[in-house]
Length: 125
Image (tube, rainbow, N blue to C red):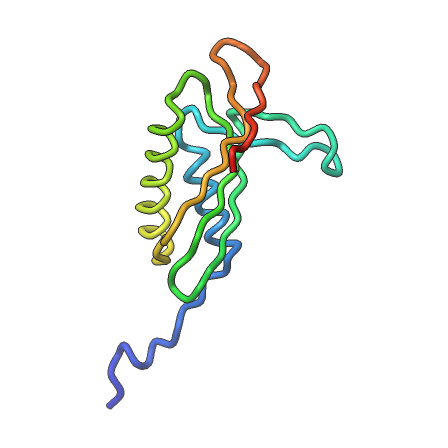
């Protein structure tokens, strides 16, 4: 008789599933936002209500996440991004079963409290 585990088959998780999962996790973190795409990619807006952008490089049962997000200012950038990194590692692994090897974060804008405007942040990389 074949064992139960051997007769179950396999599970494949698509990159897009991991991207959507990570993006949804990020949307739930206070002070973290994204950029809306606008119409045909024109007229996008930075918003704390928008989902941050996530792209995934999946390799077997592990992945690397590349995240583009904005932050509410004056949140401490280093401390906040480290918290985001740890939250993504824990939650993505828990929800998808895919191990997160690395999380690269690009903070593209800051939104000062009490204003509707974002300040653009130039990448140091």
